[in-house]
Picture 1 (cartoon, rainbow, N blue to C red):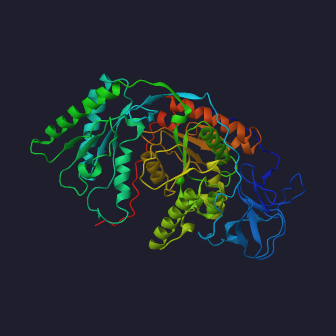
Picture 2 (cartoon, helix red, strand yellow):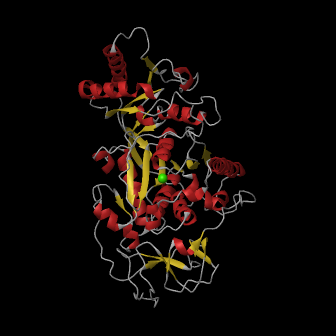
Picture 3 (cartoon, rainbow, N blue to C red):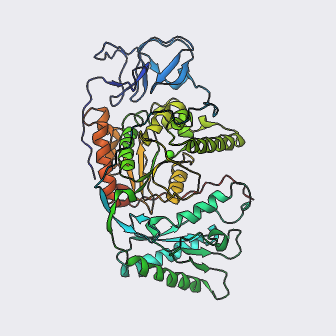
Length: 519
Ligand code: CA
């Protein structure tokens, strides 16, 4: 994987995103002390940590503070030029109303097709393409998880060596299935998610399900008629409470025999040349800092544009991290229907947060703030740039499977695990993850490419970060350079090249989004 190169940033530097901004962020590792004089004459009146904002002009009490050309807050007191503009001196603006939004008003360039880029993937009968060859065992209920774990260990040790084309066996574990209000509004989300997770293209054409036998979510409800694409096999079901199972080893024997049938099928899969349009890429960020919106996310946005031009599907998500930019998103909607669907998802999420007694400001973490992000408005402006510049052509509700190409807004919580799980259920075959604070995040069944926002992080976590976008801040590389490098890495990883998270087998648990009550 890419080894970050060290670059000293001795010259004091700031980055201003737009000409109308009255703050800029400090680039230098370790921040800069009071008295620092920038090449343009700006002098720091107090120390400013790396990634934090400095006032470029005197700001009066109540004056808007502008970054990304957007009001990210109001000064709650006079702020002198050269001061540190921390979260403490800012009042957050109210959330943008979902009424009277601009619809499709932004003049977007005609997307110029990008041909000739391919990868080596596993073509499935339903037309989807896997980037990995994995066997998955789905469960209808958490009760069976210990038994599946036991079986997976035996399958790995005893069966997998005989099927060398199959990379691994994974249990799609979750805590759902019983003790839930199965018919409540919102309960369909976790059910659809489990169903569609088991149909991820990396798992081939067939599905194996383990049921207990008395749960509220039986296999017939998880996979109703028509849930499996025509041409694919019906799911194999092993039910632990079946009378035929006398003793634990009888259950394990059933699981091993069923698994072996699936391994035989999966082992016959071969990588074939597939166009880049077969990629389904999910992008998200986690552990963000003020550089996320300056380096890594713009580079991802550039790669997103290339992927969309190549005919692929790219999903961006994380409702609370785009909510404050809803007017930018509806302005980029390809049709009024797409804009209406985005507003519907935002309204649903606003209501969901109100029911929980919080609002979007609950999103930012202590680490975000330490990294220079004062509030969710500033975080959102940096997050949205992952979506690139093309028209938004589709919207996906949580738990649904993606059925189209292009730039898709897939509504999910911002939680790294829940977002990743929902993008995986949507059919994601490569995951892009940007981080500034640093996270070792990974998934068992889909490769995760991690992009560091800062060279300091890329150096310190040299064997966890796949791409160093910090080179953009230091001037060693352009957004286009890193974005194109990422695009090529996506094709390589889709063809089987391992990411660092795969190298170390770092796997976060799947996490279902369940807005419905638990009984
Ligand atoms: Ca996230």
